[in-house]
Length: 464
Image 1 (cartoon, one colour):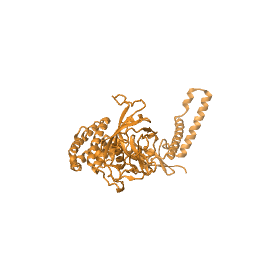
Image 2 (image 1 turned 180 degrees about the vertical axis):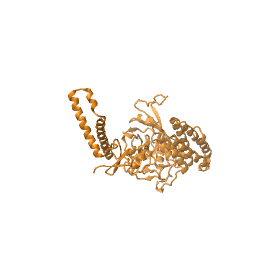
Image 3 (image 1 turned 30 degrees about the horizontal axis):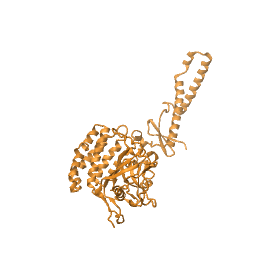
Image 4 (image 1 turned 120 degrees about the vertical axis):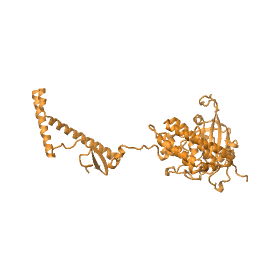
């Protein structure tokens, strides 16, 4: 089937549209019919011009005189050039047709706007999965709808800051102003949802969120200055204050645990564990800025009982019992594991994963990431903390063996997700000391593990 050339409109438009196998392509009208000549006359003129050119060339060859070149008429030169231009235009048309067929582009007449306006795709849906422990923990807080809207508006600014060249500061400012409007108009609703004994602290955080040094007003000022570094710092401060306010509004679990699981320890909120690692081979941990090399280093882990109450509760109880003190660590390609299971310690807790968008965890069930199921606490974060599988059944977690996950995008699947995403009970994240993790070697030991926050949220089963 030959391509069909159709003019867009009368009056010699600058483009021709080529229809070929259901696709449309715009071609520039490089050359056209010579004005005042019919096609038959035009062909005759071309033949006559070529004959003159041939005759004059023969004369030039015989006489070898430069003056004879002036006998070639300008009309014959233009005619020859016109033929060459047509050949070039045909070649360009063929190239463009081949590109359109092999790489079909939206270049129909109605899509001309595409040539001038392009919307860059900043991130795919999968990249919305939290990539830091701090972000994952913020998103896991069971806050009310207004607070979540404010949080989502601010979190979107983090993605907008990733745009390389001209950043959409206007969009950022609009998002912050919307968030500020909700915070101001819903003051009573925000503060009344905080328990009475925490209202004073909540009022201080509320004022700080609006007018504080790292509040929303400061964030708007930083955006108006078009300074991405200042925006990033102010944004982190505002999100941290907002998260603290949300935690005050969430005093316990937002769902009821199944009755058969009340026999396990459970953490009804957040907890913080400090783990001190000791090197036993005489080497040292590389110091952070301004500190000296030491044989010990401390890692801080935040446990999320809102999304994994049984798993984090079991781990918190193991810590308070001193079960991990002196335990050896061993390193795998992307994980640091505690050495085997501890005898007479821990509960065989069922696999516990809360899907994104749900209000309670699933038990004894993994997620199908290929079908779009994603967890609230993703494994695909550097420093994620999860329980290993039970040796007898993958429907249960190990009573005591846990691991730090060393996420590496180079060894991940589609969307940068781990191949094991949704297969383990993730219950927390490393928030301090992440730089220590790659320095840990097989044989290093846990000198001590302490539950420094969250003891009041740990509920132990009644003795039978």
